[in-house]
Length: 405
Image 1 (cartoon, helix red, strand yellow):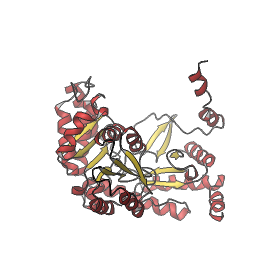
Image 2 (cartoon, one colour):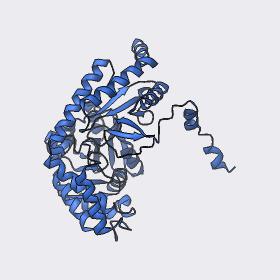
Image 3 (spheres, helix red, strand yellow):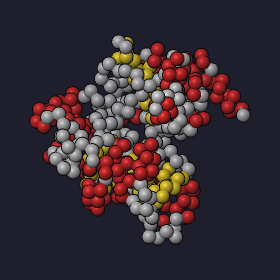
Image 4 (cartoon, one colour):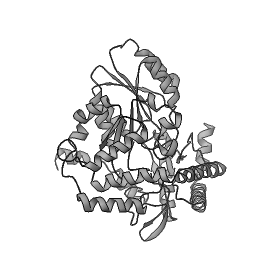
């Protein structure tokens, strides 16, 4: 056995979890991604999806995708930079820019590639990226690829952010760019964007906003966090993905001409990756139209969100500071998080276990997420089973012990 293979053979955590019967990943779904899915031929309530508006199976999106395949074929066989730009990509970019209120936009193959491509290319060796400590992994990896220096501030803590900015005041020739999630993907809370804007003006910093989990959720007709707070003109770049509310795959960055022009010719994850398929572009266009035609979807999503918040709190669960359809149910015990996830799947409820490195080791949780298509009865059933199994395996006793320390 060669050295690399020998080293990798020591990684046995998945096999150990499988041996205990609690391995929670790569669960195979045999149906469309809706509020009820099929796993091993059985009905399962889905509370682990990012399809916040429940559009993945919408007839309008499916029809748009089929028509695009008929017209353009199955793929582009190249990158946007060379032979992979179709008129439907340009149409989508124009619609996205208009939707979030910017001069232009560029579509990438995934949201991960947006953050990696933008952050690694737009800042130089003497610049600074200022990250909320709970930013998404794609922002962290993009920061690592950049020649800029990374500075972190405590999560949603404006005093901590101002301390960082103050320390960089003397770096007058350096770009200071604050990067934050709009809605934080595990914690479910919303960034304090108005305060961040105020500090950015005071200290001459730029802002990049990751709206992956905000589009379709916050703002007028789901236009995102900057629109929600009325500060879109004060945010330099807005990033978003298509794999959440927009029910497809891909991502984009939007901003004024200078940003888009530079990134089109310098973002390596754009230049050296193939274009998104025509069917993906067409379905996103259809989703953008549908969101604006049917604002009641977002209203239903928020009705479901507040109802679930209420039930979980009444059951005695710690849901942190969530203020969105992403609800963390803190278990704070890795083994019990695995046990609870497995027990729920056995009883027909799908949730996602979250642990390090996505959260701190002591903050393991279930990520419970809502869709507009959930009924109140489904929410009650799901939360009821979470409560029953949590009680049976001692989740609440564990939390009492932690609180007493």
